[in-house]
Amino acid sequence: MKRKLGFSILSIVLVLVLLVGCSGQGTETSTDENDSQSETSGELVDGTYLVKDPVSDRGNYPMAIMEVVDGEISSFEYVEILADLGEEKNESNYNYAEGLAVIANLNEQFNEKKDINQVDFDAVTGATHTKENFKRIVNELLDKAAKGEAYEPVYKDGVYTATAEEPSHGWLGEVKIVVKHGQIVGLDYYEYAVEDMEGSRVVFDEDDKPVTGDDGKPVTEEVQISAGDRKSKENYAYLDSLEVMKKMQKLIIDNNGLDNLDVDSVTGATSTRTTIIELVEKALDGAKL
Image (cartoon, rainbow, N blue to C red; front, side):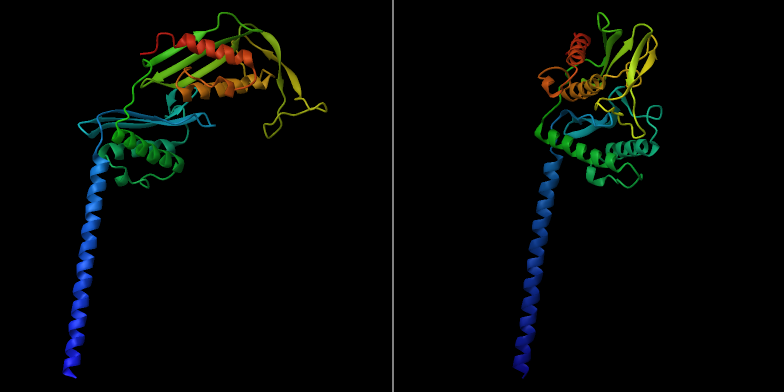
């Protein structure tokens, strides 16, 4: 009886020893993996790195730039830009205070901690979409920095403008382009009336949809246009032209210029499209580095 009890105790001791040994080996392996991941994430190549998202349907987009010196992040800035103004969202042009507070807080945290995993995304409530964009873009920047895919500016920073040589049907085209960090961040193409004249506009219903007649065409009404008025749906009935202006703005900002621009992706209002391209080319003449 005593012999059987002795064997039982010995067996239990051996099992415990084996379990402790296996547990220790597992912990060491995990530590090695964490060290390896830490070293990989810390290997940043010196340079400037930039990520710019496409212009959204709401006419704004995020952009971030990061500088790496001696393998460390020396500066970082995340902004959200209004495409028609080329301005960063601020209290004077954007009325969503929570969104501005989130942007400021996330910038402050990341510049201090230099580690996206240590950023407290719940420190300021609201602006969920901004938080998602911030995290994604920071990771894209870190990936570029790890690969050494440095950013080279294309244009000289500044504001560039151009005006059409003559009006078309009483409207004169102009373009204003804003460049920051060598990127086209804002583009505003517009046409204004050179004289007082009569025009027409499409009638819209309560849901802001065009009212159509029995012939299936939009119903229009006459309007009085004053010299200096900008062309809009309030004074111009050819809506395709207005839509082309919006699409070309997005296309050129996203493409950062006219090089290899997929012009055929924008259909309709060929004359408007051609004028925009000509004026953008004229405005950017001499702006390239």
